[in-house]
Image 1 (cartoon, rainbow, N blue to C red):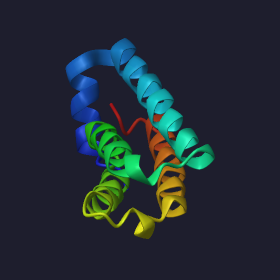
Image 2: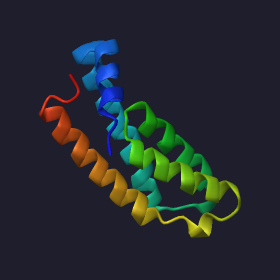
Image 3: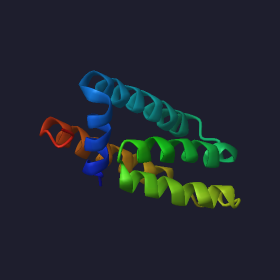
Image 4: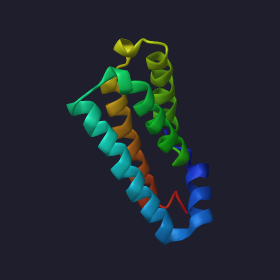
Amino acid sequence: MIDWKRVSDLHAEIGDPDFEEVVELFMEEVEGVILRLRTDPKPELYAEDLHFLKGCAANLGFVVFATLCLAAENRAARGAADTVDLNEIFDCYASSKADFLSGVAEGLAA
């Protein structure tokens, strides 16, 4: 679910304090978009929102989440936003986040 090599490389590149800041910013931004998608979904913005989520996810090693967002982004961009399963995206993010936080606590990001 998580590309731990990517996470470790990022951690090594930027160090502890900046890594923690990047993770915090990632969570805030991603969860802000997810909250908006949950409370006020706008299918005409799915491609843009999913593109943003995909990029954030790829940068922090959330591989499965990024892949799911890419597929949904492509469907939305082709005019099939009605086929995007937001709940699947929300669930994948929650699972990925739990896996990530658990792995970080275990030292996998070092």
